[in-house]
Length: 306
Image (cartoon, rainbow, N blue to C red; front, side, top):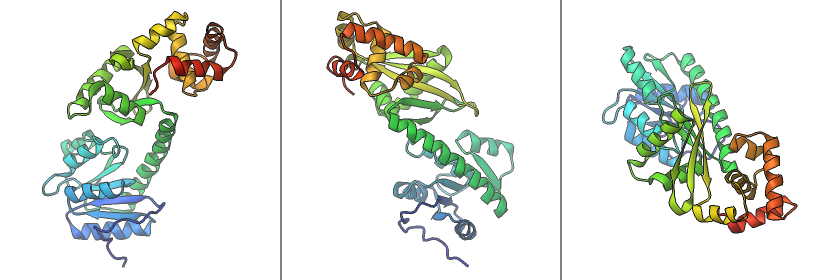
């Protein structure tokens, strides 16, 4: 029999999916550890929520099998904590519970769990469910990392209006707008909720400009995506008005200066590629330039840099 993974050892740097098993029963840890290792997973183990948080600090897993009822912080509170931490919120959590009451099942989903399995565990079922959620989470994560690289300010809200994910750029802008204290998330969430209801909303950031949140619609799972855009501050806008650029042309020029293609700008600003081309024709004419690089150079002098 494969030995139980050392719960305190630092995990190796590997490419296999890493699963964290959290349960106060040693027999359950051993049984799941053996099954997971045989399926090609790297396994981390924790006896309670506090140990599980320590594992997250060492290596963020690709999935969690979590006992719902544990001494100290229970599984539901632990799940809420993970989902409230942006760097960890993408990790799928599958609850393990002997509780069959519907209110407990609903509580698991409400705090951010993606699935549940009932004890006594049926190992083939657990492995099949876990593999599906790990695979889906990895695909989603790749898409999110692509957004991160693009530097776009994107926020995803779940069906209850909570921030399920946000790009690094969105995190930075929201911190600039609402602060980084314990209540900042609630204030930011309420503001983003306004964009869901009214299609878009703005917030004045003083010398940094105005932050715009635009509702991009719902996804297949009922989640809503919001696109954040930071427009130039009033002084920069005045300088651009002096050369007769409209606010929309200023936005297009701002994204051009950040290296975005016409297609990118069209997607970001919610307009057609032809409209972007027309705006750029006017911008080039007003700036007295003929190339994108020349326009970007002027924009770099006129627009505030992030």
